[in-house]
Image (cartoon, rainbow, N blue to C red; front, side):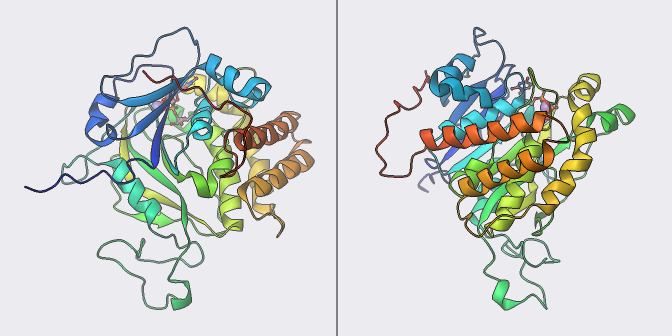
Length: 360
Ligand SMILES: O=c1ccn([C@@H]2O[C@H](COP(=O)(O)OP(=O)(O)O[C@H]3O[C@@H](CO)[C@H](O)[C@H]3O)[C@@H](O)[C@H]2O)c(=O)[nH]1
Ligand SMILES: [Mn+2]
């Protein structure tokens, strides 16, 4: 009788789910997610009771918990926007994070087999990336592939993978204008590939189906100031992705995109999205050149140091685009302070009582 295998990274990975809805979607993921610990970040009204399906090991945080745990530093955690999910990254104690939206379901591959998205993300994270030289046969570490002729042997060791960015079948993650002109467009194209995003190239990171190595890049995964009281929304994951990419480039880490796919079921309202996004659509024409021009010093040897240097440059160069970026630069610093308070270096004596877990 074959001994049951322990799920990969069972005790080293947390699944972070932001939610304002219910968590029925977990039933479909049960075969893949049940062995893992969930961190549920309940957004919106904290008096609303979110039912977690039986049999899952979880901790759940609502806005009252965020305020209780972070005190005044809670100001850096967005309210009424999926950006709140980054609070889950901060309170986790695990090496890896997988975050997924509550309207994302198990997709099927072309053979009709259910896709274990978590397993593919783990494979992506546990194998190196190739940011310094593009391999035309895609992921060279994958079964049945390799480096192609002309690929320098000195670069074949690759770089540690910090982020694994998955994709979506059915409802693609389009911005509001695209959603408005193509309301019925569905993504049915399953591309069987995992690519490393080359060094020096930015990308639009979507938080819907995303995994990362928290120890390599966690402090950079701040999803910004979005939603309630802010002039922008739905750019939380984009902001985190641009900050993360300049930092992984600087620290010689890799980011992969492609497999795994999930099935994205809900198209959010394009008119509501347009209101949330309109500043972002306009500002990003200034933000992209800013991130493309960012340089970090050789003293920036940790993610926190990189991030604080970045916050300084945001204030200096983007504050003139809009006063919002001064607030965001402050929030970036607060985020790092809160991160370091909740995640002191191993062996450090801590004064905080740590996050009080609300599990069952
Ligand atoms: O105020 C809110 C709104 C939503 N959530 C939770 O966040 C995710 C995503 O919500 P939703 O599926 O409604 O939004 P999409 O437009 O499909 O999401 C895309 O935009 C990104 C948001 O910037 C998101 O990551 C993308 O996938 C769900 O789990 C909601 O329950 C929330 O917590 N607060
Ligand atoms: Mn959605």
